[in-house]
Image (cartoon, rainbow, N blue to C red; front, side, top):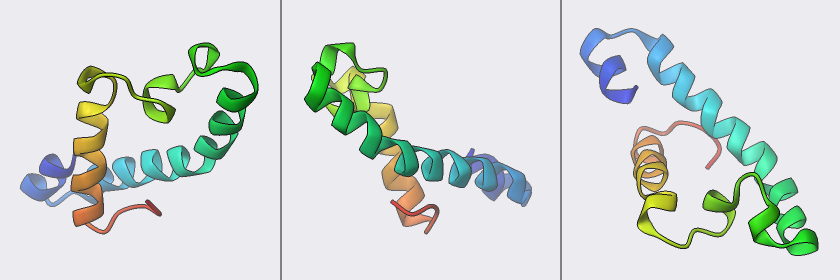
Length: 75
């Protein structure tokens, strides 16, 4: 999405990414508390809250790094 924004000059692509990161920042505290209370395996965002393999977080972490470098979102 960030590359599409850069290539087209259309901010709707980077806005989508920013909104996604803002959503994650908003809900992650809830899912972290849920993981502590009920265990990570019963958590809808286990791959983000408690990654166990590169497949769990590789693309998301890469996206977060790119978003951070682009100064998007609160993360």
